[in-house]
Image: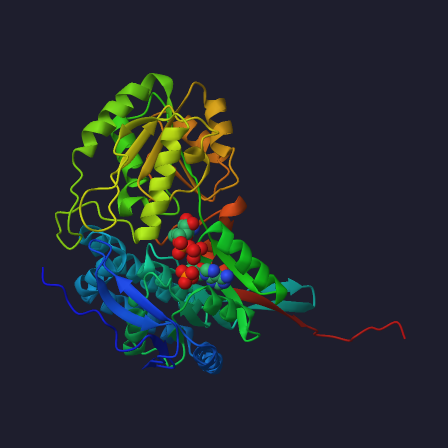
Length: 486
Ligand code: NDP
């Protein structure tokens, strides 16, 4: 495939227009499959961030005052445009992230479109309630929060932008979104598409930048809510800064999620779950089930089947639709992952597959499987965010649940079993926000997605997301005399 020119018109999108300011620190986009430079942008200077916030602030009242069905129509039109342009948008996402086109065609703009369609459909049904109080009565009104800041990670740039923008805009908020500096491109496309779909200028703005731009976007008094997708250390800083201004937050952070495979499970299904939960997007997924606990009797059959299935890996140019396994996003992420693999070897885990950088240009690391992993090993405790699967063994259900929950993280968890009661019992016992029975890492927009413990707070997707982008105002209505003590 010939590589298209993906240099955007300008670095930022503010108040309905592409805006450039070359005074900002350069941001260089490279193709993870080759290391070549593809585009060059600039981080926002404080004046640009201020302009974006002013635009979002000005646009908010007008956007909130629209009839909700009209807001919803804008979002649904944007969903249609995303789907019509899915191929081009997927190519941009592949070039920006290095993820195979085979994945981006079905998982990025399309899931963003699902979010716009879903929340567009909900917009007109968001009301309050009537509360009878004898003679007097009260009612509640669901109001937007105001200007929201969205800050994204680099693994699903378009999806993350849509998962935040769609519920925010449906509720009548406006947004300033900062993509990760590693993947700045697709959010700019979303901003253009929303305007094309009829969103008034200023409703959705994009500014590029590093952490300090994010910090300015959180600290500003005009901002009512901050929604971050990122790591736990960044989440801590962002949550703390937001607390200073008593702002609402959604924190979608990292994890070290468990996947339990009981010996009564369908082993092929469990292996598919482990592949989805460890090697899709080369392992760069927050909810990955990176600690795969396999019941002792099923251990060798599971490992044998997993080894066989790894022969199906097609590593290559991510733009080739046959490729099903791409590079990591950049060199520093690759080095980090290789460091964890070394720690696995040093601490005595048994390398079953992979374990090395691939001898080709770009930042490819082989799909790696360690067995005989114990709970105290670094690879069983820390989020790797790369294609490294750790297999641990267990004997009893009680033991598996206890060890699965023994982590500060709580994003996701999965169980494979053919025992119906056990599946639900284990799901109930997991201390995680998003759990799976006999599947893994499927995140349909209808289902709330989020975390407990250090992995975050708040929910994206589903009706639950509405609670995090709106607030309830109570109105008490006195119908009779007002009695007072004097
Ligand atoms: P980071 O935490 O490094 O960065 C996330 C975003 O926060 C980036 O846009 C980053 O900007 C910005 N940022 C960094 N410092 C600050 C600051 N002080 N104030 C405001 N913003 C700041 O995460 P990565 O981009 O490396 O993404 C990987 C992480 O994201 C993993 O831990 C993964 O688990 C998590 N993640 C969670 C998901 C979820 O839904 N729970 C989904 C996807 C990923 P910059 O990049 O310019 O530094």
